[in-house]
Image (cartoon, rainbow, N blue to C red; front, side, top):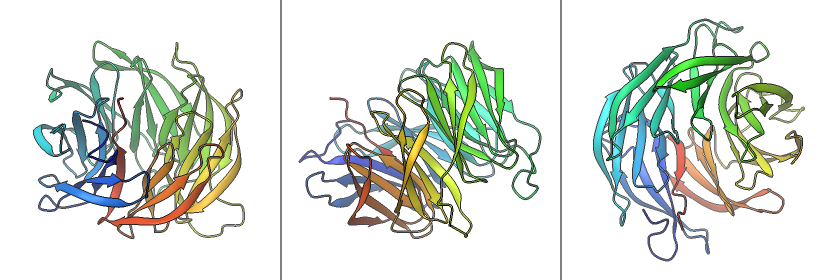
Length: 353
């Protein structure tokens, strides 16, 4: 799909918590000249499409249906209108899938939070879901009985070449990494986080030497040395996502890097902010935190573009736009937002020009 619908409009999809009758997936537009946002259209027929991922040329979209009997759904994207046509769906064979990713090896990966399952799905020539090629079950418990009574796979992220897959397990305080062999997932190693950390989301730096994980339960980001050849991770730094003087409860959620790798961003639910860090280009470590209020409550997910950031505030039913300074990484309010019920994911249509 073209990255614009007239007037060079930037497009993005928003996933939500919704009933099958509601338009749970919304296509939205952003005018980069004026900062104006608009709702273009919506797609119904899927319950709780809480996480979305587009393929590289934005011709296919995949959605997680987060429920006790989880499913993933594939859609064809109309290249002119951006409207979605369902191709098919498959059960995840787990409970509450909350994160999806596409691998360069041509597969879709899914993390099931409540059951601790991680699945790998082959895709056919049309980009539809073909079959489940791998299903692994995490077992165990962590430090906190209220949140870590069992394994909770919260995200699944492939390495750039698709040879390794990294699963952040909030319940086990581990990032478990797998080797992909003949479509199966074979354990390659694991990194143990401090007790009660609760790893949630994970991102690999474009330099291929560092990675970053955001930890939901102890309000930190962990910096890793990353070995793309053997897949190994080594902890280099833990840094707080919230100010030292904040006394309320807060739970980090999402983490993203700027495209140039100079800045890293994390969302804080409770503190209701986006924190920006400067990335040391050689060491990969983080410094100079700067916080920006999200204009709502419970920023579950967000997207970082060159000149903008788009934040989904789940509890205040709004998606808020911020201007981003590419030179400093700083975010500033624009006053622009969209009313969308229980937004949970922002998936931009990246330009393929």
